[in-house]
Amino acid sequence: MTPQQQKVIEQGHWFKNRSPYLKSFLLTQGKTLTLKAQQSLFLRGDKHDGIYAVLSGVVRISGVSNEGKEAVLSFVDTSLWFGEVTLFDGGLRTHDVYAQTDVVLFYVPQRALEQLLNEQPQYWQEFGLLLAQKLRLMFTSMEDHALLSAEQKVCNRLLMLSEHTEHLTPLVLSQQQLADMTYLTRQTINQILQQLVSLQAISLGYQRITIIDKQKLQACAAQA
Image (cartoon, rainbow, N blue to C red):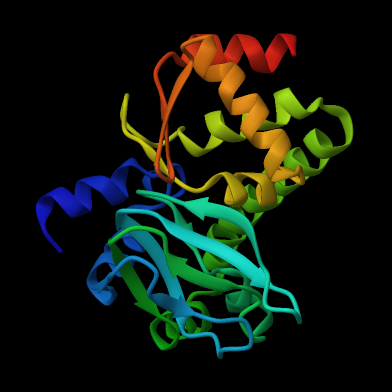
């Protein structure tokens, strides 16, 4: 891992608040992986093999129906960790994970984690906090779905996706993927995005959404 990649991991909310020992353990036991855009990392039903952090790029978490239609659940970008669910129950992977863009990941193998937790079970709480963060986001998403207008759902989701990106860095996603994440139709998404373009809050490109004015987007999320 390069010094710059370690700096990215240190910026993540979960990692930076961990104990020095756990940080050192993860950094020494892990390794980097590279995926090309649209390459799969793991699929639903695969055996658990460890946890991951995104060093650069974006990964996509999704499910596929019996008819083959993909439903995008979330995107994971730099400094964020994922894959911890199966650490707790020892079950199979619950969803598909693909590289949305070219990505570099940091991977800590399951066997190293199991050794740590068997020898020092107090660290279960540390990984429990990572899982709790995901649960909070899930409950917020469920509340948004029940209470917010279509415009608010779209604005809030764009703000959430851009939380860990630098200003004017495009979000790499299609309108259909945004529709999947907000439980709206693609036609509704297109209408709302065009309204945001007219307000000069965002700009659109091919499978790209760039937030130009985050304050305008926040205002739309609050007032829609």
